[in-house]
Image 1 (cartoon, rainbow, N blue to C red):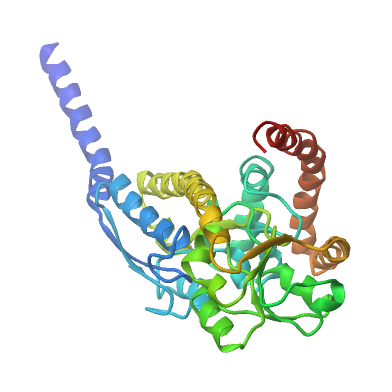
Image 2: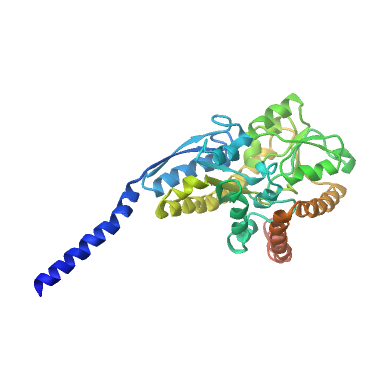
Length: 361
């Protein structure tokens, strides 16, 4: 009897060891990844956020994933980041989906649209409203896997050399603006100019553009935009809470064992929380010093401009949904949640802001 038990136990142990061997080998695998981004290194919020993500993923993987990070233009041009990951020149990237809308207009929804979801509502739709499944479905065609990586919060409308007196003041204005906001401005008579972040300040200084939007007080001050253009319009009608992304080459991601796939997801989830907190804190801290700079004036959009922005944004969004079947599918999901979010935000978010203003002025 004892001999039978011994033989049985020995066989079971040998079988377990055989089954466990692949898992052990997988746990010893290492992956050296190249990461690219459209921002210069050390750019507040975005460049620094990408660096933090990379280091966090290395830590969560126990050093089994190592990442070499390249800033804008160091390995590939800023607007070719998706191409680099898709083609395998890079394994992973940090960016924002609307930089690639020339390939697929539907990607606008995953960064944000004019007067759309804010920095809390966008991840709510992605994580719990079906948006993430739609995003992964869209990116399947590009051979990449997306992860939400946070937001800057409500952005600024932009820096202008001259005050905009009304809608006619937009006509002929050379305005650096990204996303669907560029199409709204084009329909109102402006000339949108697409520039990567590193070229904004030089273009303002040279006169190649008349106005520019970037992010908000923290980044705008760091980039010195106030030194050339003194009129600061807020808020950004076109970016109420633009989303950032981490994208991974589909084959590189598939090659990871399950625990490292979970590490990528966890690092992105941490980045989504940390990035919004980082922007919120530093925008709050930067606003008053920015307004104290000589000649800077912060203004709301004139009433007729605000009305025109709202009306034109609706038309642009209607046209976007009509682009193709996939865009219509994503747009219907996005807009359904947005229409529910508006009355909630009006009652709760706007309500508390009104009460807070009474208390603290």
